[in-house]
Amino acid sequence: MIEITPPLRLRLDSSALVANWRWLAAQSGGAACGAAIKADGYGLGSREVMHRLAVAGCRDFFVATWAEAAALMPLPEGVALSVLHGVGESDMVAARTLPARPVLNSVEQVARWRATGEGRPCDVMVDTGMSRLGLRIDEAMAGALDGLTIETLLSHLASADEDSDQNAVQLAAFQSLRTHVGARRYSLANSAGICLGSEYAFDLTRPGIALYGGTPRHEANGHIRQVVFPEARVLQLRTVRAGESVGYGATWRAAHDTRVAVTNLGYADGYLRSHAGSGGATWQGRALPLIGRVSMDLTAFDAGATEGLDEGDWLAFDYDLPSTSDRSGLSQYELLTGLGRRFSRGWC
Image (cartoon, rainbow, N blue to C red; front, side):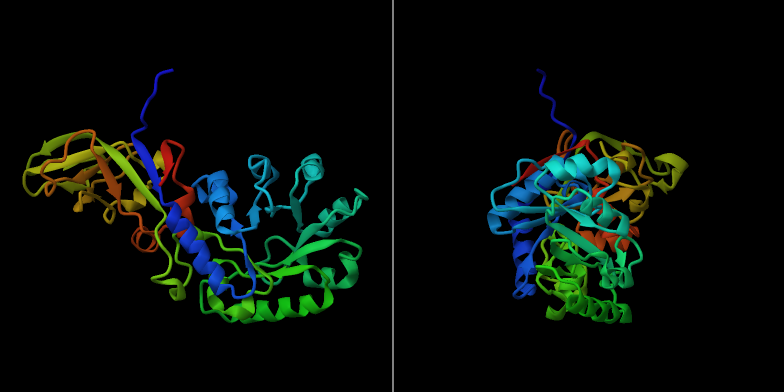
């Protein structure tokens, strides 16, 4: 078999991932700290993330779908897995077979799970203000959940990354639910919710974006480390003469003769056009500003300050999630989950 080195790679920092989880666990106080690893571990590789966090002590993991759950089998010893999207009719074989719990999200899903007659434990989502997934509060309190063996009762904060009155409203609603609906554990806080304070932690927290280097609120500034470092190989170096343009639409023209590095990277890889005008890279600590537009799989950089750079060398892209989000207008979630499969992924 011919071995081919991809021209794009993600350098993934294991120690940063674990350090982020440990900080979030410390902020969770007496609550257990789980991990959301849906969307293939936010693009990093869910199996690799799960195994690293399980070794660090994480025991509760969350995926979106049963296909994501199946891809993680067999689970590490002592680990629990929950499937956030619950059970549709087509999910029942997987739900009965795999060692994972559904997070039931509607009275229809509750009825479907109850009809199995097996009495297996489940998780349940109740909507306290997101109006997305979850039973309504009045449904949960009117007996819709009677007879279920509920491992974890969950809800989800809609505005935890903002200083919004809605946070306190949802907290109060969830506290009321806790007194009326029996479950072994209760869970409300995501990454941003953990930062809101210990009263949001309950028995189990469910961080996602902060595990992977995202800063959900200002309280996490200086505590969350970058995990993902995208890099691309230089495909060509060329000199663009004064007055000549680079890329589609001739949006950038050289004020003087300029050395330009063209890389194997573009919007087909999740590096979107919104990075134009603000994006950049480094090589041996020297900055290379992005010039022109981002194409489907080519992007150009001003390499004038990088004497010694050659074709085949690797550029490291500016990809600190909070600052890159501010510059590009993309959310920290989009920046992570959009990175495509043409990137090889390597943990260090």
